Length: 321
Image (cartoon, rainbow, N blue to C red):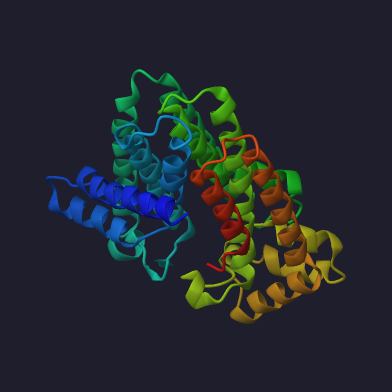
């Protein structure tokens, strides 16, 4: 196991060097903003999934590296745009690009980073599935964000509405990371389809955990203020459960619908959601999706990369930040 972890660590180091090269620009100001984003860190989860999946069939780093770069750039661009929409001051404990350089500049640098991802995708001209899949997902990611904005503060949302949103926001890109990592190395459907399904289910679980942590995490570990979704009127799974099952649903509904909430109201709402069992319910859904994701791995060859995917599944379920 130590060997495969070291290999992935090495892959990610190559990725970071390639990312830095890709986002360098003649315009020093643009390079400064892009480099700032890279140095702000991140889990590099999507590239890691691609590197692991590539190992299931004829792995070659040069085959998967452009994909890994494109995946991280798409993700980075979406975060920059999200921070503008959410008026976020920090991410991972450091000031956002928006906080340092303003909304207009942030939107343009986000667009530029996304355009850079298209350049990387174009390297797979002979594998049309890459461009087709990532273009479709990019459209759906935008649809998810639009739905989130248009449904803000609307307490009548259903669990179906919630899953529509998180599928597009998170699960589809993670699913593609797992599938395409194998595809670009020539893997057959018997390998890349279980990986696709694994990624989708882990992606759903990952986003639900994100939404739970927004209500329950330690703020220092989370790297941003707790209760951000409540402030923005984003209705997540624990809230939907509480709005349906809590004895205090009317009070909770009033707080959620307020566009301007005091810190006391945020903490009151979090307490009501927790007392209703909303956080426990959401965690139980995470457990189900992680279990189903692991079941997909049983269809794959028993190699060290599969063991790491099992460990990542457990990390997603148990993470605290």
